Length: 394
Image (cartoon, rainbow, N blue to C red):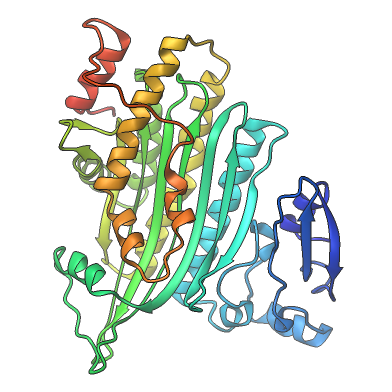
């Protein structure tokens, strides 16, 4: 029996080699797609292909069920089994599960088209990730869901960015500053201009100073970027996010909604990127487990806040002018991501960064027109007014 990620590829792939399975559930294997796009899922390390006694030991050790994932996790499975209660292990499991759930939901909306699954490792042996991308679909022009788990020494540029937010680290005598970061990030660009773009990112970061002090924090959020305003959809989106926040503290949603409006703002345009959502960073109280619980609730709200909106709008007819407006709004999306986004900047400053995964968030197509101004009273102008004057939706 093949794992989920093995099963998903069998219909489009031929098996090149299969090693001993793990209790018939985990398979050490490699595939080549029939469409000549090679997809090499790395052979699991020998420690992942185990005898019955070791399998039983791993069950006792509460190993994560990787059959739920799109691909094997970045961290060695034996390490995760040995540390099931560590926040890093729990967070990596959560982001891998979130990736798989979102990809499955998007594939269900799309129909026959499936995600390309790209498992990758950094050349410097400082982590890796799993990038899932679906392109040129009927419902989704481009959908990317990326998981990354990276570690190494923090660059001076990244440290400077963090110090500007109040972080205070002490480098070792050799100049090193060890860190570990992981997260799941996604941007989904639908084909139909009546369907909004969604972005979400949930991450965990820790830095170890010279004296052994470990600084840790969580960050993330989910936000919506419609091309045309639908008040019902905006209210639904915010209501689901508020519900996720309220399970932990009723003061969180208004605080993080305001932060989202302020963060996803394009100063050179004088407008927000979209109708907002929630955004938070540097969250390190009351304790790591409670913050992780909150982050998990937010991640679990992604599908219910977005899928009903796509289901409602994906088959609506649209004109060439409406498609053109979508392309112009995507231009704003590109501007924010490349000029202002903190995560993009950190990625560019990280040695050995995987640029393809960082640039995954950009749409396949966008447009810039000189001095384009929507007509007063038009649906396009109504959208601009909302972007210039953020509303309270719930």
